[in-house]
Image (cartoon, rainbow, N blue to C red; front, side, top):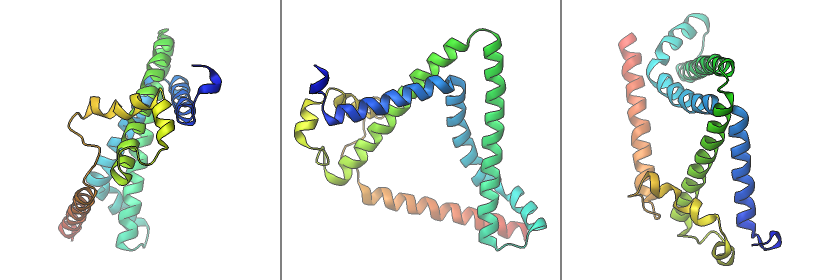
Length: 194
């Protein structure tokens, strides 16, 4: 395939994946993993341990209950994210001293590619679920694309049973149920403090 035969879909995917690989190489494996861990731990800590931050905020500010809850979540989330990133930076300095920085950078490149493939595959699943399989792209572009089949099928290697036509109403209902459960837990915690 010559350069003038590359379709728009392949061009966009190539730029996206190249940027992800460059960004992964620049950050390194340790920082890329730390970003994922920080996000997961930050959200977990925000939902389960923000009551400590809420108590501190209540002592120092005269905010409404909702503002205090949001502020406590944000404060806890940011604290955990910053803590994880500081530890990751320290580990990265140690890796640099042991001459393993090339492996760290190559690992970051690979992880950046995998993360990006996973994200794009999830995006294609979502768009296929909303518009129908491949209905959101021009058929001619999809047919001549070299990269799109790899991106489209990447998710199936992680979650083989996932269907392209997702039950969006069920997903929305489950999301709303989860939000209600989180609100119930927050209410129980706030009533326990009183």
